[in-house]
Length: 345
Ligand code: UGA
Image (cartoon, rainbow, N blue to C red; front, side):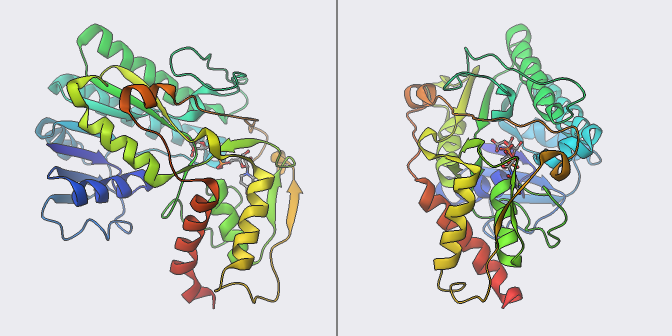
């Protein structure tokens, strides 16, 4: 099988490509604007990489959609600060550029595995979000945070419609706060607030000895999923035994790993303070509260809780997550300490 991964250097892309190359005889064709996370892939004869931008290298992209069996367009902006500060950039990349790829899959009859998002559920009030039943609830237009959710939701609907009217084979998957090594770049400048997702933001602050900032008190909750669990699920989705995953949507998350952002901050700080490499520092980050208007800007609105139902993934895919929150945080922190302490010490 030949798999095209656009955005192969990203958090999900690099980890997925490495696993595919390690465990299968599938070939991976990848494009990305960077290649710094591909150390596990380079050198493998089944890995074919081109450094480039999907919005510029259109001929390469079209040729490879035609050549491959499965297409995974993973190029997207996924940091809430950018949704608020540069909503048009998010719309252009996450919606318009990805729509082109969807249409190429339709044109060449290719199977599309598309990353939807936990954010499409928005401020849904269900205890557990269900792929086929839950309502998708977004805030007003002036709250620009929702442009990411709305862009992804419309693409989900367009993909669904292509499946319904023109027979496109697709599976949509919705990651719920995946964390792990190579998640985001650590912010060199703590003033660049919100430039990465919460776990990497907190690890940056810990390494820099700067305050960890809890937005609006930090009582909002998320379910954190370890990357290896997520990749296990994606491997089964790619495999698609008996083609039974076509036309389906799956949450990929870990409902048992729910925590408030405040808990997360204290857990990470404790792991950091007990780690052999950092346990003897003179000073550690304090944990403070900040207002979202100051941290993200006026167009931010939060999601207070979001728990995935994973019944469908358990039944149809035969998958469930295994890594608990403590282990997931520990492994993520260790990766960043290993790769950054040379600079810090
Ligand atoms: C994320 C992003 O939109 C995407 O990465 C993705 O689609 C999706 O959710 C997901 O991973 O499932 P969110 O969970 O809000 O959205 O993103 P984070 O930036 O990780 O923030 C989580 C929470 O921590 C938010 O309530 C935020 O306000 C808070 N936060 C963030 C802080 O309290 N302090 C910080 O320094 C950063």
